[in-house]
Length: 64
Image 1 (spheres, rainbow, N blue to C red):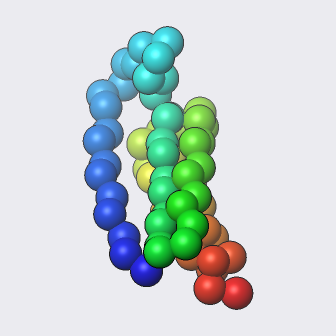
Image 2 (cartoon, rainbow, N blue to C red):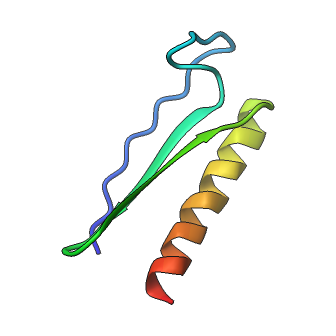
Image 3 (cartoon, helix red, strand yellow):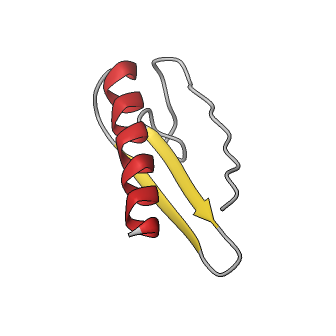
């Protein structure tokens, strides 16, 4: 599997198109690409923890 990621944390304000708490997570290999879009209320640490847990869950499901 190859893993490419880009992280961009915005300050406390967002837009309608890019609200605070918006995170995209993607995982791709030679046969499949999966993308998850998460929108979560909460502070930066909560959103970061949710994103990490979701990414790890995505990997866990792929290798199971």
